[in-house]
Length: 302
Image 1 (cartoon, rainbow, N blue to C red):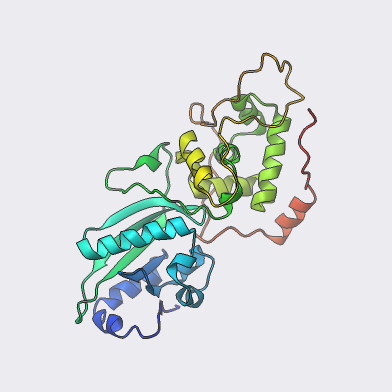
Image 2 (cartoon, rainbow, N blue to C red):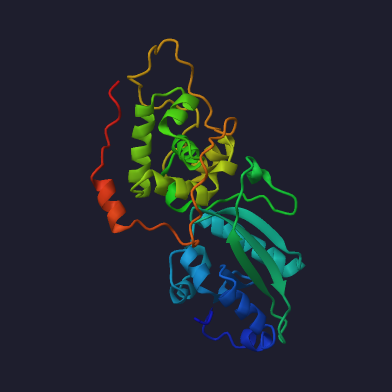
């Protein structure tokens, strides 16, 4: 068992938690979920391996960096504001949002002040499973998130996020094409581009990324907001046109691209199994080889 990591000079915090440290350490080591302890200014004093892995670092590396450097700046700033509010008010806050591209439920609670009156905030994270669209607007007892940390998904447009969402719902190229009024060939081109951008070597990997991100719970408007707020790139409407479709029988009468909701007619295919950890996705050598052998980047001929 690896002890949770504490920042140098923790001193009073360790003494303060002399009795409760057993509880905090048990939570950090035995529950298998990311656990952090913050000061009111957001500095991280305790971090377990699961929390560090979620952000793609070791525990020691995480402690050596400022919390604002762990993830998307807007995401970090929103969390720092919540930490300060919880520490001062004592009122717990629960949030559901993307952390490095994975949908996570984070709960912030105030710890009892130490002998010097210093207050700290405990953050416990866990995978959030959602099947209902519109959760991003807020659920009972859950504070709506304004900033998501998209991680690898930050390179995608709203259109691409929407197609990834449909892949995550188990829909085939034919089913997606029918929903979007596009040919399976055009959908296949989009899927291949998603694989290149996300370094995913198969459709199963793409589905797992979508499932881990909880994309089925995001509406078209949510996806457009995600693309608009991401760092760099341009926002693209979920209703934007896909590449010209040579297999469409009648371009003049083809309806405008349908919304990418994909919720009206759920596929009967079961969702992919959840990723065993909250760490960012890694591509195996075999998957990389498979992807490279199918690295076609040309869109279908118009």
